[in-house]
Figure 1 (spheres, rainbow, N blue to C red):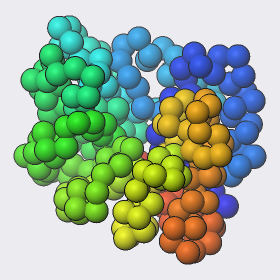
Figure 2 (cartoon, rainbow, N blue to C red; figure 1 turned 60 degrees about the vertical axis):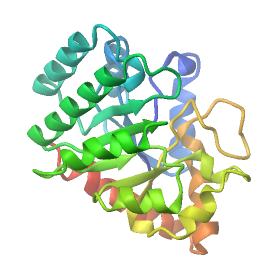
Figure 3 (tube, rainbow, N blue to C red; figure 1 turned 135 degrees about the vertical axis):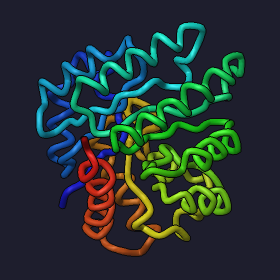
Amino acid sequence: MILTDTHTHLYLDDFDNDRDEIMENALQKGIRRILLPNIDRSTTTRLKSMISAYPDFCFPMMGLHPTSVNNDFEKELEHVESELETGKYYGIGEIGIDLYWDNTFAEQQKTAFRQQLQWAKKYTLPVSIHMRNAFSETLQIVKEELNDGLHGVFHCFTGTEQEAAQLLDTGFKLGIGGIVTFKNSGLAEVVKKLPLESLVLETDAPYLTPVPYRGKRNQSAYLIYIAQKMAEIKQISLEKVADVTSSTAENLFFNHRK
């Protein structure tokens, strides 16, 4: 059985004291590929160090997270573009729009998001989209840029069946994480009605830890609990969930790299 964690931040300092153990835990649970989205300039060095330390296991994405968009976002975008020009990346992310905490830089977030979608088309790379309290704004821009092979995943999907249908109409996939294991989230009922082929699995570690470890630091090994919940929801085998979601991740991130 092979599982793919399509979105995790194991390069953060949350894991500095036991990173080797965390990686071994993931291997023991069948995780064979881990995709690491960038946040901003401050995380790029850490990201690259982890790729060097765990080659053939960890695969980087490059992007500017929407909550890191502020007055100097243009310099941040220059950094992203430079990395895309010179580095080896498997996606553009984590990008998007987040109006949950603050909407001061809402327009700048939209500008940064659109620019990075355009780079995704230029470099033939998938995108990993972060969307929080900004469903209509995010979807509108994606639809406007939906040409020239734009593809990717809406990371950490937690919406309704109707919202899922709108997102899937773009041809994108949906990233399902630990929230699907939360008893009162309602996400399991939505996922039950979605085609398994439209979904990929993710942890977003160290955040959004699934049951039975909810409230503690997340890690890629816990992807197994998300996969098990998916198997329960779909009433299929764990192996089937692993095979289908890993195949989707393969086609999404590894068959389109520049």
